Length: 267
Image 1 (tube, rainbow, N blue to C red):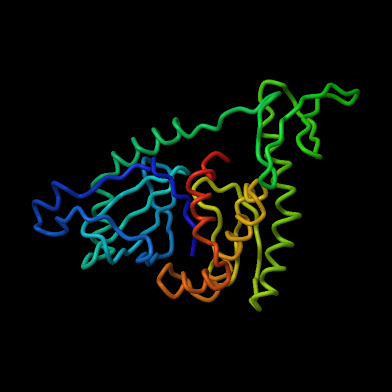
Image 2 (image 1 turned 45 degrees about the vertical axis):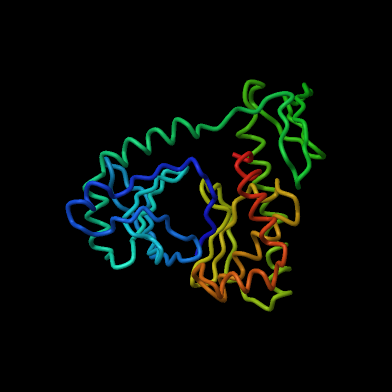
């Protein structure tokens, strides 16, 4: 399963006119996150470009909902009594809207450039990026790390590459440490540049982690790792899953609040 970023700016397209015609799913009640049951994501053509789609059955939902996430992936909510076939048909009827929303999201989520004086987080601490001219070329220094850069106009690509390398070093080791503590077996760990989730865990025990976790305070990072590890025991986000999370990380609600409020700043 996967831990989705709580972006409140994600776009929803709710079934209104369709519900009026069919007599189904008329309620405006919002789905409850703890009731999610996810299907395997699949590639679906939209506007001639294959992009990932995730179908999520939500017991508390009363209508179909399309949501374009910040990374351009599409989440299709299936309400109580609905079917995947109906969800696919609903999605295909609104592909033009999906294409427009994906274009808008890409424009609005374009990364902000980093240059001399930009402050970023590293292990939860603010660090100022400082550019230095050296004999070997221009370098960007932040915290105790330094990386060569091509231009002073925007050093974000090189700094993020360095953060990703740091994540491979720190996150993989820490994940296996926590797995050993909780007596869990991880089959594989990958570090990714995800735009809408902090991590994911497959049924085969493969865990993917967002490299930006190394920028978080250690306690928040540990929570995300524990969250994914608990999916080795429970794949959905039901009550049993959250009970496992609370047992392993009693202060998980504070970590969730940090992710909602401060996590967005890492993008």
